[in-house]
Image 1 (cartoon, one colour):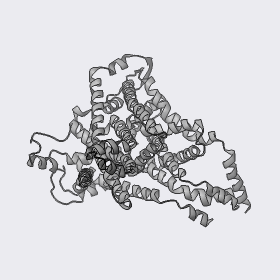
Image 2 (cartoon, rainbow over the protein chains, first blue to last red; image 1 turned 90 degrees about the vertical axis):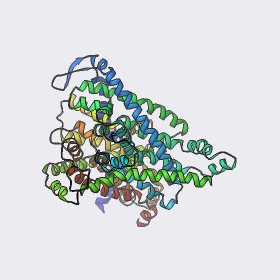
Image 3 (tube, one colour; image 1 turned 180 degrees about the vertical axis):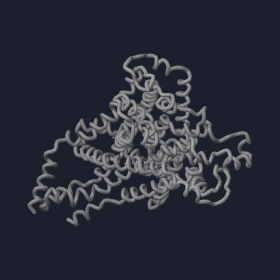
Image 4 (tube, helix red, strand yellow; image 1 turned 120 degrees about the vertical axis):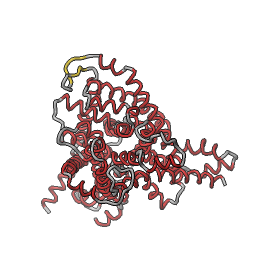
Length: 308
Length: 269
């Protein structure tokens, strides 16, 4: 009884006595040290000289930046951007019908339908890539079946090209696109679609000018959670892309490991950071216009991560 | 008629997506029982790849590393993330918390490659030896945000009137904490911890950057096997790995879905 009241006082002290800053300190300090400072450090190290043993030297130089802007890298940057945009468009084209379909099902079973699309995320990321390597294998049944059916000529390979990178990236990103779109579609008032059609709008017109704007918030979140990870993709192009499938992430990784030159890796990373900031700002501004709070977009983002 | 049509289109795409999602996984599991060394063609049922797998010391070692890193990352990120969620919720209107919120949100948006390279650059600048410690520090960093938002989602549904009611009924702070706050928040904390665990186990890219000799985790091992090793063992390894993450994810999902029942907590009191 006595000890209890002591602990009780201790907890009421926590409630009233521990200030806001003390409760915020652990996460703020941690993320400053291991997230914000390193992220900014990247920009500084891009101007340092490399030391021959693969470290970072004390000198300052502009050479690395010049080096990174040479055509070879600009070409890779361009590929990174168009592949990510292609992946995002395909993900939207697939996830909008799926989100629509799930949201039209009996509410009792929607969760289970949604789960079908999320369960593949529960397998390890690399293993999903590996599974595609088996599927797209030159000796595998898929290629032989496609050749037998005359869909592809017999000299076409499915693996180690940019097409494989796009397919596998779509595969890994799709659940993250389906989640926010479904979340938005579930709240959509479908009687609006019927009303539009009753008033003479074509099916396409009703879908395009009523449904799509209605789920706009979900679409914006889906773009955000697909486009940005795709731009930072490293493992997928490395494992299924071959020589012509390399993206910026690969160049960063190569400069950080095999052909070690950390300032150059930093300069490439700085380039990638700047590139991904553009869609983040554009989408963030749109998101703000669409809704005052980013709360629900955030929620679907986190739910996407949750089920991962 | 039109309604039937649009439903048909979406059903068609949905079925296509389901096949697209499951075909590779089905192939992978099937191939792990294939006797042939190089995949491709089916040459008969065999468990030999599983036997080889369980005799491989480097795989067992990598598994131990993975579990150790995941455990450490989970413990620390759960504590830090839960505190962050609590303070974000308690001081919703403070400007400091708005910045805090942004700081916790940002790691969710930044690609793994950038997080990996920036941590690597920092560790190299500080001349820290790369190894299990650096991997754990990195994993805690990306797990904190996920834990914080999971617990925060839970807190937003939290009915603070319950605390008031309990106080009015004469309960002490300790009783309130044990009987009301903890039971209601625990599923959220456990779900956050489970997520941290699976994210840590799943991570390859960040580990690849900040890892060093002796810190090979299972995903890094799978990667090097895919690059250099015999492909057949990876099939078996993948299936085992898949079974483990599935179990953790299912438990996490069940806990997350379990609706809090405030009335029960009050009734218990």
